[in-house]
Each structure stands twice: as C-alpha cells, then as structure tokens.
Image (cartoon, rainbow, N blue to C red; front, side):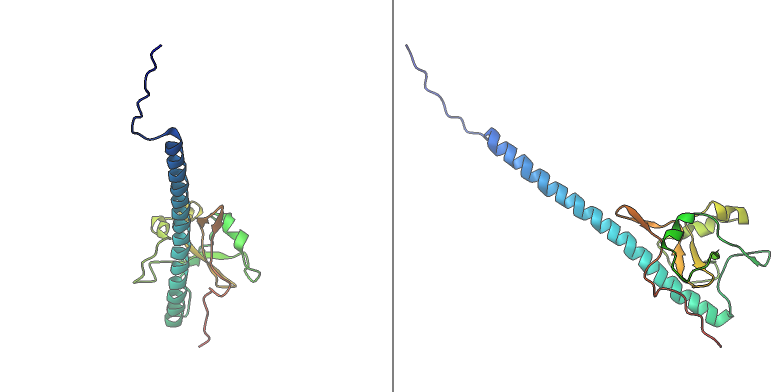
Length: 169
C-alpha cells in the first residue's frame, strides 16, 4: 500500500480566521457605541449652548425694551399649546403659561434648534410646530418644545439655574 505524503499548504487556519473576525466585531461594536454616545453628547451640548445664548439675549432684550420677546398675534401673547411632553421636566416654580420666544425680535443669533419658529404664519401653526423655544411666564425658564433625544429619553431644558433674570428698573 502506498502512503501519500500530506502536503502542508500555507494559509490561514479556521481557528485564526474565527478569532480575527471576533476581535474585529468587538472593536467595531465599541466604535459604533462610542460614536453614538458622542452624537448624543453633541445634541445635548447644542441644546445647552442654545438655551444659554437665548437666556442672555432674552435678558438683554428685556433690559432694552422692558418686555420679553414673545410671539404676539393682534397684540395678544400667544400661549404655546403644541407638544405637552416637555412638561415632564417642568420645574416646581413653573406655571401652566408657556409662550413662544419670537426669534425675529432677537437679532444676531445662530441656533442649532428652534428653526420651526420661522414656519409659523398663523396662530393655528403654533399648535403644529414643535421646533420652537418657549419660556414659562412665571419661572422664565426656557424650554425647547421638541426636545433632544439623549439615550432613551428627551431633554427639553437644562439645569435649574438656566432661567431669564428680569431686572427691576
């Protein structure tokens, strides 16, 4: 009987290929997870930046004009009655009166969110548009009505100290 000599061929073994694929899978999933976290952090930071800018601009407008820059229709303030979900983060000193901040009255700002304000043509549109910034009448806290998704929840405002300070003349 003739015995054939086995020829050892060069190549990659099945075990090495499996380990390589597993390592690549772990590295890829880690990168995707970190990128997702980075996007959510950026969304929150953009909201935080917008609210801080609006807070200072609304305070400056109030100092100059003696009133808040709120959306009016026929001389009357327009109550915001769109997305009720932002009230989940309502602060203890908030009342039920929320008004849309009129971005046309505040010049020279660039915001990441709140561009839906420019889609409002009539008072009825305020019930449909959520991409707006609103302010509570009593606490003067600014909210982003649409909210920013971070992890599995929505953020509508930032810390307790982020509210417009009204100065007495």
